[in-house]
Length: 568
Image 1 (cartoon, one colour):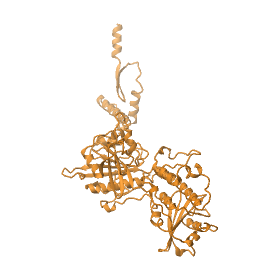
Image 2: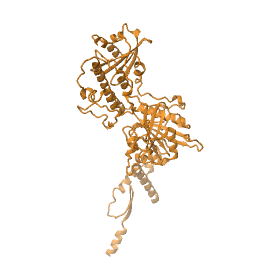
Image 3: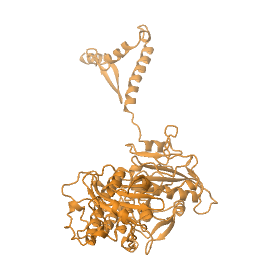
Image 4: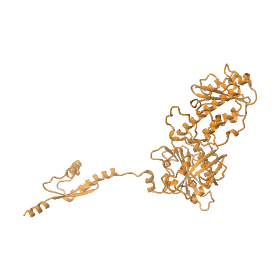
């Protein structure tokens, strides 16, 4: 009897099925047990929210009710699934799609501009030009337009230079030349920030202006009341070295080799084998040379002991020497995932070229570096089986740079495809040089250059003043302290020339310290990160000003000053 009662109670239970986010739970509900609110009440609430005409009629059949119930559940579950969907990163999504992919992709965090833009109809490239195939349009930029003026117009003419220390603008070095043929005065005023150059017709003045008046014509912030005359015989050599400290005819660039599917820094630096296609592209850029005993510009590579590999790619281009740091030719270290022997050279370049085999785009922030500011990507898009070496098809080009790097030429053609190897070489080498020069205007480099120039100007001013006083027989001033002379222009360093060489050649200052507050009492920075020529400045012949022009000297001196000739 008890057994029959239990069976009757068992079969009196109703079977229900609860739908969850990831499946259903099958359970029985007895007649005396209440139905969970999550099953019964939620469905009732959903039914109540439907329009009156869509509510199931009470007389509907059981099949209709079940169908409508499942439709409602499907709508509820559909919204949940949409919330749980995730989106692939841009690079992975593009790789899954396949097909013709762009050469470059901007990082997800931004901070780079890309040329040509991914959507030309939305954004116009800052350097885009419809007629960019002519070699005559490939002009190389000048890093400092004022650097050669002193050498060109002053060095071989009679001129005078003056120094002063202004409380508001700092040290000043002024050079003045009277061009009698043109009847005009040519003036250069050197400040911490820049050099100002101007010409003034002599007919504008009733009498020749003083040095103070000429300085104020160029910079109204000058408040100094008098200048000192420079009488040191080697002053033109020192001034030329300062003016041209940013001029360089040597460049070094990195070359990365990216294969299909390589998206990380580790993958790109791990490539060792060079394909025939990559070797063919390198031959367009320059010639492969043996490093041991190499006498040209070495770009920081070891030419004596083979510690940076045995070969490199080198070329000469319009009077400039270019050394390429090819990743596959730099030493490979087994067990080193980061390949620091390769990254220490390419990571310290400012511009790198990326050659791609396949359709994998390059994302610029995959290479972590404080120096690299610009990448130029090249991909061969068409092969010419019968083409000669160095002219093997069509190449597509794209450029990306950090957002604070100004646009630079030559402009990319439309479409950005080159079919001639000679035109591609001319374009790439010009683009690489202009990319580096333009990158110096970025925030990191501009701050560094300002500090370097300020330190060099302090040393030049101190050296010219001290040497001039010695020429006049006056006792030299006490040795400058570090805080006054920015590393001590005369303090155990061989004068301005030695400090100048040290500031230009040494690249040990870390970019991690840029923008950080300077410690109190710390020395002024004199280390430059710029890539410059390592020529021996002392080997230049010293040339002093010759000739006599007492009227020009007397007029330039402020009242109360006497010329060196009169004092001696």
